[in-house]
Image 1: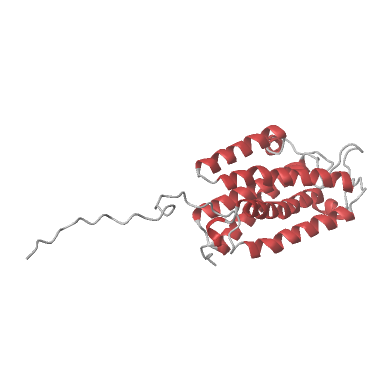
Image 2: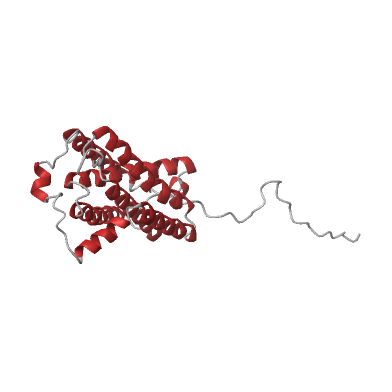
Length: 245
């Protein structure tokens, strides 16, 4: 019997371009699909309220009925230690304070490997402030003189937008479900708006309705900005994974 020639089998070579390689995890969407339907009407409502208030107080230079009912924004009667606290809060909306907050947020997002969130940390508050700046020129409401445009409050819009972004990042990091994430975002934005709004009214820099307009501006701008960032970068794993309800 002829000896059989034994040959070693060589492992099959994969087709060119199909080699397995480790890929980085896909970027996580800023607005998960489960959260978008809840934040969309919130953003629309915020835009509508800001618009209505702007029309109501266009060209005014005095507090309205709602302003007088809530507080006297021109008294400037707050005294230490509350005045020092109000000035400290106000600093967070000034250019130097805003830069410090945004720099810290960007550093944190990059440390968490969330570059998309780092973009939103800059774009969200930045566009909120830009929107209030443009709206002030259009509305023309003033406080303490014709040179002091007041509606809507840029300080309130900035801190509210910043809190909105931070809450989105925290909720995304913890992978909270829709209800918990929505409550966190709205609560953080409300607290930031109330704190900064209190400081602005007590320092007689804004009327209470200016503060409300700034807060509503943040509610409208940040979700829209997050959606645009997601659209520009691709929606990450949410396009392939089901969202938690």
